[in-house]
Length: 139
Image (tube, rainbow, N blue to C red; front, side):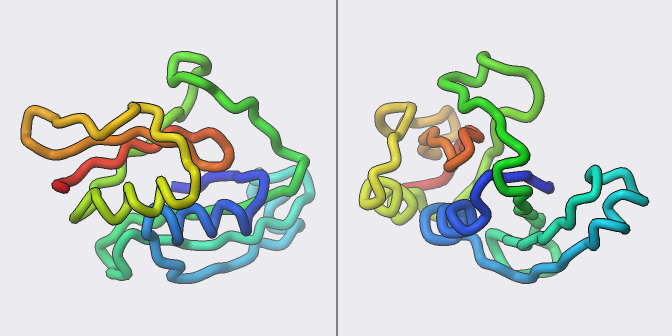
């Protein structure tokens, strides 16, 4: 999954220090190649690769920034816009994530952990750009 963010360093900090992802790599695509591939209109892409677990089978969360060129209004609810609005992150234990969320003053939009039918706990937060993140796991 590739995500364009406004502030790359702020987003890397959020996903590594709050969510618990690990930085596993990075690469750049030149502005010429981006134009040729139809990715950007003459902007270079610098991409940081994150994973929840550093293994070949883990999904990649790719973050890239065009600075202030790309902006998207921050939604209050998932129903405020169309397109990708949220991701679901399954964690081995929810309590360490909740502790980091609370220590960093990130609002838990669901108010408190809810218990799902399968017994897992659920919280909903937003990343620095407003993407909703469902975090699900046992306490």
